[in-house]
Length: 163
Image (cartoon, rainbow, N blue to C red; front, side, top):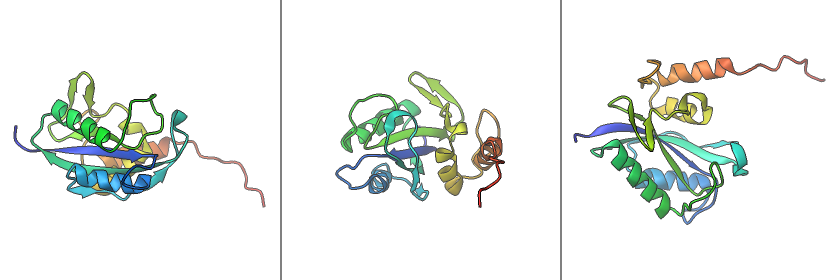
């Protein structure tokens, strides 16, 4: 298979041997050979994870097919100290394939584009930094447009401010 591009989400909310969650994310970007890495940003936890996360997005070039890349990313997670646990629980490293330059892909357990990426600002904000024009192959919208739509859909607090 020829080299293709993948957009990868990186996240951590536990210290590991590389240091803080932000340092872990940066080290993981190096381990996966990221050609582009967004800024690493703090993000409130979803679900039972408890601690806030350090999140980023990366672009990786690979000649691996999607399922092969997924297996390799899971191996990198284990090498960084990730252990099996509950869904959305605390973890040293989380690596998710968001997009693939070849379009949609589905073969259990992997679905590309990532089924939840359109509704997660902690994914779209860093991805917009490094790949604003990458199109979602399902909706046809760019990453920048998806982020704009997500922000526009959030309810606005219209209560008067207290002096």
